[in-house]
Image (cartoon, rainbow, N blue to C red):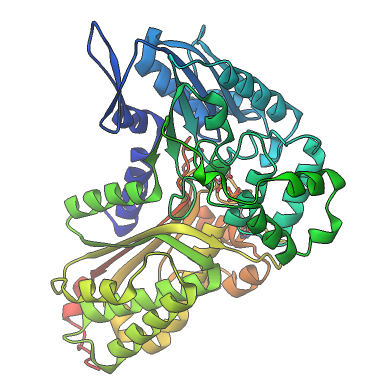
Length: 513
Ligand SMILES: Nc1ncnc2c1ncn2[C@@H]1O[C@H](COP(=O)(O)OP(=O)(O)OP(=O)(O)O)[C@@H](O)[C@H]1O
Ligand SMILES: O=C(O)[C@H](O)CO
């Protein structure tokens, strides 16, 4: 298999492990005949009670189908809010296993066109609210949560109107608010977010199974944490609104809710009836890819599952890392160039401030790798693209093209090392859709930009118009695009770096710095 085929297979194994069916099968088990119990993350919940299910998010249809399969007749009733058109598109894609069976006990409500709350999503949220409010101490509520859940569970606190909340959310997003900031505001203005759903379901036992699409898997941010204690107060919300210059243009309904909200976060409340479990995440996906890479013979390291920040700076980080890896594979020692690359990596990591990444430790681990073995570095997260042009693309295709350009430029300096290694870089969105395109991401190599120039395609020109999709679609008839179709899951993006010394490397004179 080529490096590219290996990279694709690693991406597929990462995504495969966080697909709804395998994920639910790992997380949820029924045991016992006479007195059945539901086992969730080694906690047992007796099923003498009535079992209900609610869910909201882009991946929730497949999660509900898998859950219903496991729960069978124990499930009394369910309601899920899922994106508009999802049943039809899964049907068309032949993904039957992600659809509910005929006569399912789970009602499906589709809404939130373009990931924005709308009257249909509001109707679904009201139905979920009614179900939760009607539960008793004898009931168990299973909650399925995935990314996109915020838009699919709108319940503005009266007198705030849906349109007012939607407008505020849109303005925050367009001014660059991060998801943590956006959801901190949404929680304060909502009946169900920020732990509201769990509070309404009390005294029923609540078990939430959560597929994380946020860096660091924060329970109170994913889908705005409807079953998690909120760590945000009304002061936090006011600070965020002030930061984005929105404090003085708020509708009077929002002002009224803010001035009557408790000043302390709801964390002080009792959530002992709630069990929140992350059942799928970027970290889990990377762990599976690592196992697979090792079985293919790669010395494998995971950089981080939280790579975030400006796509251009992240691309520089990956280029410097690839150059360092090639230097290690191609040379007898690292020398001054190695020290320079390591210094750059430490500086970039500090600048990007990637949560939990200890670059010094990572470089130490690199040092411990055996020489001349094929190397795999895995990473994940979500970069940010500041759109400047009018082209078509996504953050993964943009990242791959920027890495390709960076490696092309580095060939001037690192020619002898890059020339002695085969290198593939892959970046892909685990949901199978990168931006508004039909690709999940793209591959690149140090040769890509030069080869494209021979076809008259200038990567820099495409990048200046954020037109990475057009570049990859034209170049070699789209051969470097990663096309998977919708996967039915979403744990942000994944990057794979594969490097091995070429057969030529033994013939070329070694460059020792
Ligand atoms: N032309 C473009 N070039 C590069 N990136 C783009 C372009 N157009 C949109 N994007 C990026 O694509 C992202 C939106 O696409 P997408 O729907 O895949 O992400 P999302 O809304 O974060 O959803 P999810 O997390 O479910 O993937 C934004 O980060 C945006 O900056
Ligand atoms: O729904 C949301 O709030 C985002 O997808 C983050 O989970």
